[in-house]
Amino acid sequence: MTKINWDESAELDKLAELSIKTGVALQPGQDLLITAPLEAAPLVRRLAYHAYREGAKIITPLYTDPEVVLARYRYAPKDSFEKATNWLFDGMAVAFDNNTARLAVVGEDPMLLSEQDPENVSKANKAVSIASSPLRERITRFDVNWNIIAWPGTHWAKRVFPKMSEDEAQLALADAIFNASRVKVADPIQAWKIHNNNLRERTEWLNAKNFEALHFYTDGTDLTVGLADDHEWMGGASIARNGITCNPNIPSEEVFTTPYASKVNGHVKSTKPLSHQGTLIEDISVVFKDGVIIEAKASKGEEVFLKLLDTDEGARRLGEVALVPHGSPISQSNLLFYNTLFDENAACHIALGQCYSKCFKNGGELSSDEVIKRGGNSSMIHVDWMIGSEAMNIDGINNDGNITPVFRNGDWA
Picture 1: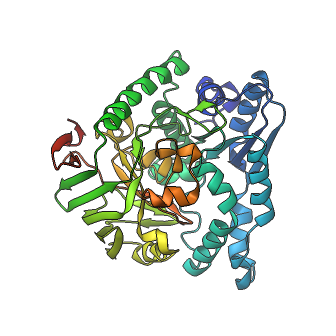
Picture 2 (picture 1 turned 90 degrees about the horizontal axis):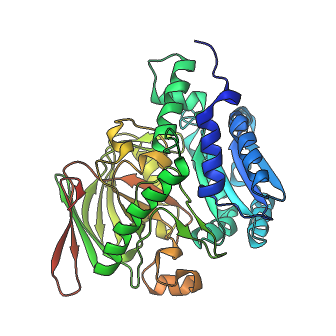
């Protein structure tokens, strides 16, 4: 098989156009900051083409190189892993304060750091979490329009399709990305309008119900998740604080909101592995009491998972709960993508750590203290892991104790 000619890929061009027009919804005169792996340059070039045609002023691409990352872990002094590029994150925060749009391209090898010292990986990630807090605050507040899309990186592709050749695997992953992103149709932008309308119907129903809690139950799971005061369900297209309606995630099949950080009780098991810090964490099982994880184990990667829980005080609490039907296209593909952008859209999931302040009524006007008073969680991390399956049942519980079926056997009731 010959190498893919990305310059002639109609689907790659459609993905770039969709990202600019519907994903980030770039406005004339806006600057755009793009982060991407070096290998994704063909996609970044198409993004720039469509962005400038939409009237972008300045496009700034920032690339990461896996070989440079590995060189650090192999040869850098131990004390260097407690250092991060604060100046870079501070600069990005300033850019967002000046209404620069944000676009992230993912596609890195999810297991890039799997053979490196876990202590160094943990230190480096914590340093980045601390240094990037100004950036994270602006994203979780939804200050500007932003979007995440995927590039079929060759090493990532081999993780997903290990029995194929490198070229075959990349082609197969590209096909899966294009399918999940709805760009293999004649008019992807119209397809996303329809999809957004469907997601909006779900969020409007949930917001009208205004449940006090959700009860998840199936084999291995009996979990009650209290919902934050004045919580708001969101999904698909959302309005950023700068007034621009964008689709932060492409693909996206979820509707999500903010749990009450101290009102989560019961036990829950993961239904799909979690790829985190170069480690595949399997068969996660935790027990919550009054919002805090008091017991945690995993059949594989447990040490990394426990380090994650000890990141800070909020890491053992929930910052997001999301509903995804088992019949979603990503779920039906039966692929493990090793990437949260895709895997979280295959099943209902919960996220440890930081909540999204936008998932409150008038969330854009709330201070951090007001978010916490309403039950939102604060943390340096935000890590999603999957708990849904074809057997999952979910009940909505009203403040008077009445129960409404939300999911039955993995799908909307």
